[in-house]
Image 1 (cartoon, rainbow, N blue to C red):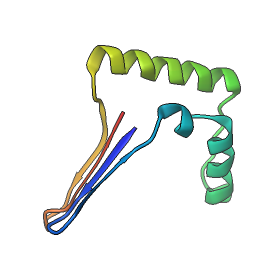
Image 2: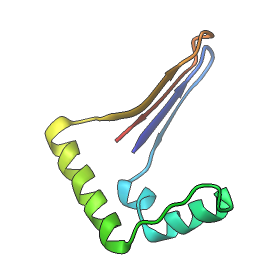
Image 3: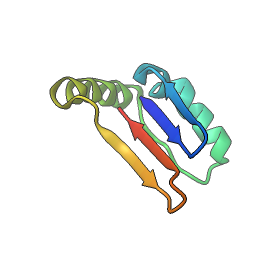
Image 4: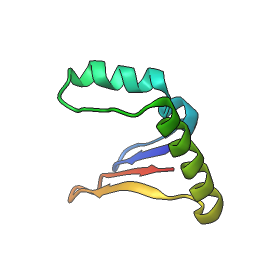
Length: 81
């Protein structure tokens, strides 16, 4: 997963492996941080299948944009797989 943040003065680029984002520990952390406001209920098998599907998509389609945000000020945020 790649996260790009750009504004007039600076730009930041973060790269995270997909397995680091999509695992049981990160799902537990997401539950704890959101304090039960967002229900995340994926089993281990479902997470494994999600990772495999994302891997197949990356091979066939290359970089796949999940989120692209452009503000009137010229700021940009882009999240890609």
